[in-house]
Length: 135
Image 1 (cartoon, rainbow, N blue to C red):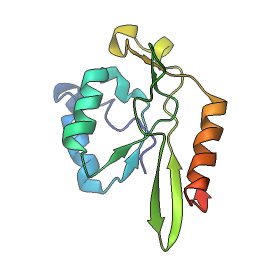
Image 2: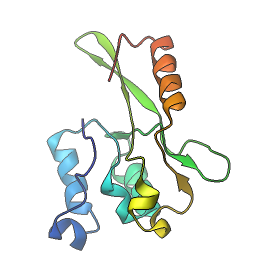
Image 3: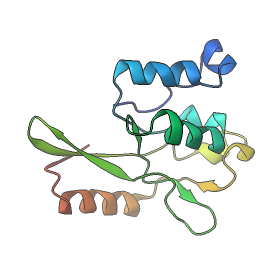
Image 4: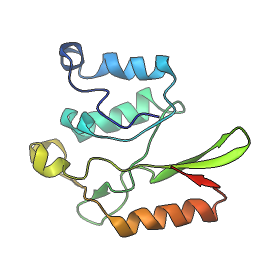
């Protein structure tokens, strides 16, 4: 699991537009991650990584990232993995203060926030889907 911050912070990550760390995530065997400062690369770059580099390899989950216009989810809220025979749900909670901690132009069409009720709905949905453990 990756709780965020992996792509951002080093000179090489800046110079490669996060590609060095994206490749490292794949080599290290990350299965599921959420976002923290990754959004500083901008919404387009984050989605490009999700759809091209991570497709079929790493899931980005974030129940609290929605579109600003219709509140549609930008990412899956959770995934369920079978770990040693136990269905485990991993619910994503991206950094809720991204729009005020970073320039708004980086994620202009995404809203964040704590979203307690959405979190509970994600937990309930994962349990209804068979998760015995929720992380």
